[in-house]
Length: 128
Image (tube, rainbow, N blue to C red):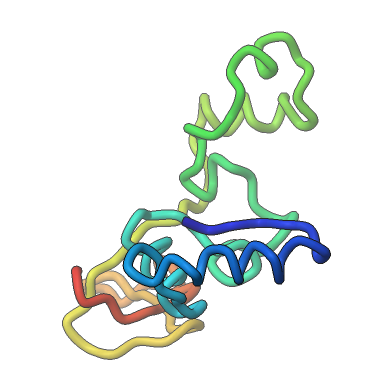
């Protein structure tokens, strides 16, 4: 689980959780990165630029409230409807690589070697 708390309660919450030594073990941010990657969830600011990518382009259309969109109560509903109908120009996808790669590497088509994308972030996973 990822826990979000107010600053005043974080210390108490951490101490209470760590008292249950058989059930709870602390894990670092790298563990969270691996779990998010394995679940297909992006890291805002790393995998998708904050405020520059719509949920459709980030492959997160399942998070949109359909009733708010139909009622035109969601900010930017016109752009979201357009992208749902036409599809975004770019889309976030996951890749399994046999070799090393790093953020910023361009992906080229085969055999014409035309740029078709860019790697946003990478992480090692024992499961994938």
